[in-house]
Image 1 (cartoon, helix red, strand yellow):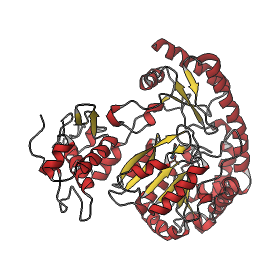
Image 2: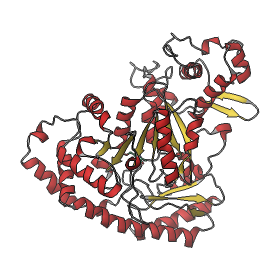
Image 3: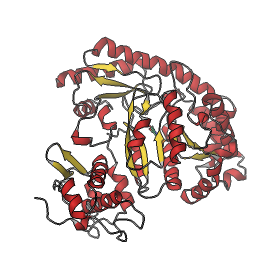
Image 4: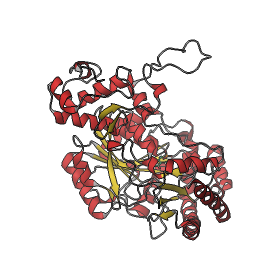
Length: 506
Ligand SMILES: Cc1ncc(COP(=O)(O)O)c(C=O)c1O
């Protein structure tokens, strides 16, 4: 039964749970409810009062309450049941991590039965954590596995050895948090040629992957409570890292033309940053149309916002040359371009880069110095030589051909053996394809069964921001199927197993 007094849920401006002066009413209420859920004052499944009643008792507008409820619902703290109202979510992700939860390690008497004193930032980040099965050796259909047999590791080892044999001062005592000049120059050259990115060496910062690039961008550019717009569906790793900054992560729909730029006007206040994958949405593979690119840039100008362009795998496009970047169209220095070598080379290389508008370089350099210095300079030197001696270009050309064949093979398998179950969704590149379930089957169950069968398939619906309003199912159900890391015969055999497993389920 709802309680009668909720004034404690709406912290005054000076309360720690709320925020300091200037915080808008909906954010204060959002913070108040979120803190009460995290520290256990509001219980899982507890019904909140109707928005009208709560607004009246707190002396604020109903719109304020509705906006806070919407945000809390989109972040998974509340659930809406049609006709019944809003409830504290029963299954909050990572409940063990919340303030007030007890440590599980029964061997450690020092922490047993004591609340874990995690920061709000850690709790927010962990709310977004998702658990995919982890296999020691990559299994068929994992979407982020490139062909490791195709990478020239002998050559790579020689380049690494060479950088160790006569290490100069840049390798032994690196002093520029932007990274090694040789690698930065090669990356800038490659991006200008292959992606139309407008950049020079001095704008390139080497990082340990796209994930770290997003972390730095959030540290540099957002304050707690700012809104960061992300794509829905999108890459799960992004949301957690952005949420840790204290910003509110606001999902914006993606359709066949990419991010719905008009949807940016529907956030409670203008987003400070939009994180987008214009070349290829992850996982759907849709490309942001030119008209939308132009209106996104205009929107950023009008709202004094930043755009982070996450170009995580655009070297592999099979139906034409790689697409030009959004950054290349930007005349107002609002786009921060992010790239990674995780997919184009191999995930364990842990190298990526940012291309920064010049005005941001000093701040990012300073912040980076505090974060972790620089990634191992010897690996940077080896990658610089890999580029300079032409190996990067040849590797990409060779892999593009091979992946294109594997992709065509998987598409044929779907058409020949499973056209009554799955239909391939259009996309023109990357290391995976998406296949929609024709009968709208529960894809989370499909994933569970396929994992039991030894296949690393991901449910398409799990990439959508949850929960959806009114607990609607995600708009698309199906499977994300990586093809790049397996030879055609392995793909054929594994796909046979996939089809048998799904047919057994129905
Ligand atoms: C869309 C997207 N962005 C960013 C990343 C993170 O890349 P990295 O491994 O460089 O941190 C990934 C990784 O799979 C991704 O899919």
